[in-house]
Image (cartoon, rainbow, N blue to C red; front, side, top):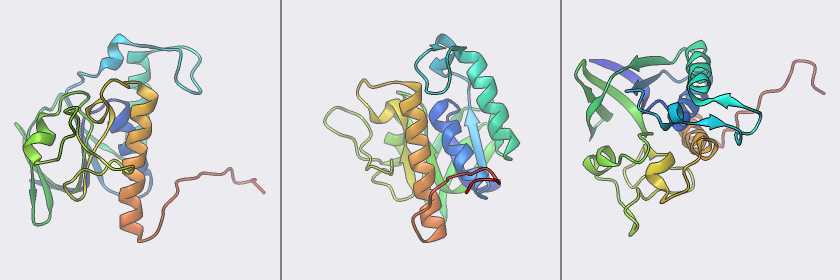
Length: 187
């Protein structure tokens, strides 16, 4: 059994954005990904800062970026179950169980793990979250398409992942946390 600060289930824009923020700011982070992201069917013309990029190429770039910050990626690893325990969460895979203090669900429109965990759902049958993407289960977050009826965009999902990560970092630091990088020569 491995232990980590943050377990991210899903490796699309939401999951990798969350993993980037948490790992970049000192939290041990693991992602679990079956590579079933819709990004492989996409071409980005509407993602801020990217004029034109194939979705698969974008995913390669994003994976390389999170790995450069030390994220441990479990590629082609399906999560078979999640449950809350006294110390956080147990994430189960065919490889074994993983313990985490925080859980971020970023599985696109697949909501079965959120349901299994006992998260509340809205009348629209989406996972009910607050503005920080936290679910009704303390320290469990849901992002992207699972929390939106039809507003499925990579840039929105990445923002959801960032919001979840910043809330986790706020909890860990005990004060509002902002991830704002500046060049060394900034005034």
